[in-house]
Length: 264
Ligand code: CAA
Image (cartoon, rainbow, N blue to C red; front, side):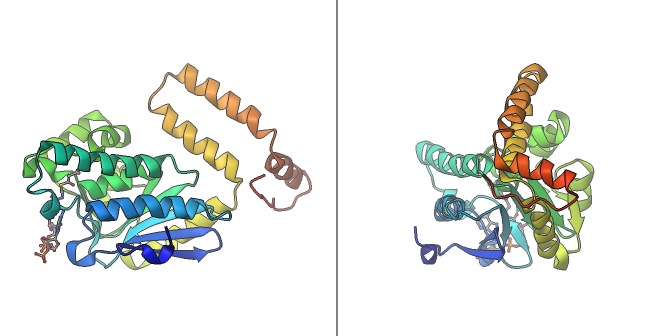
């Protein structure tokens, strides 16, 4: 897909290797319809294909919302089969983000509800503006989450808090989201993007393969025994000693200089 074909989002390289996807349906609070989900999927693949890409940031356009959920107008009249298929489109995009070779950070600027919260949780971590509002209000619409929220929320905040949020459908503000571990940091709204880019630069200075190994190991920790997870860690630790970046990183330390990682 050519970058000009993305009508529902913007793609920009903010700094060398630091890419930002901005969902662009501000009038609908960046609600996730099928077209947005498919373009988001394609945009991630497109960015990953840029050889120098190091970190991906995802945010919403406008000052009101990251994404206020799956598109209710589009879903309203779906039958059971169409709804299941729509859910699968969303799930596929969320999995694609989760399995990206790149670290992915959600920059949550405002409403982050339903499918929007599910999108944020498919990223490696979430940075929030002080006006962020999180929640999984699907039950107030007569449905459970459809893009993985029932599975990713308990992994982020624990089963008890996840059940409370899912069953009440109540929203939490940025400070509360920070307290329950849903987001990692809260910044003044005007600083969110800049602070996100700063953090992305810190990440991008590290060795790409080591980053990918860390990402996989953290994800694996949610689903397997500590023995299996530690075995996987040993394997990936060993594998990293076959990379040029390991030689560079440890040599740079002994030579008291900053390492220059290439991803090799
Ligand atoms: N889908 C489609 N359109 C949406 C939307 C959504 N999820 N959320 C907001 N919009 C639209 C509104 O319809 C409105 O459009 P119009 O101006 O054309 O009427 C526009 O965005 C602005 O919204 P509001 O006027 O409602 O703005 P507000 O400031 O009064 O309220 C809000 C903001 C509290 C976020 C409110 O819009 C809201 O509750 N939105 C729905 C949130 C929600 O329930 N999300 C879950 C969706 S279901 C889901 O996501 C399922 C899944 O897991 C896959």
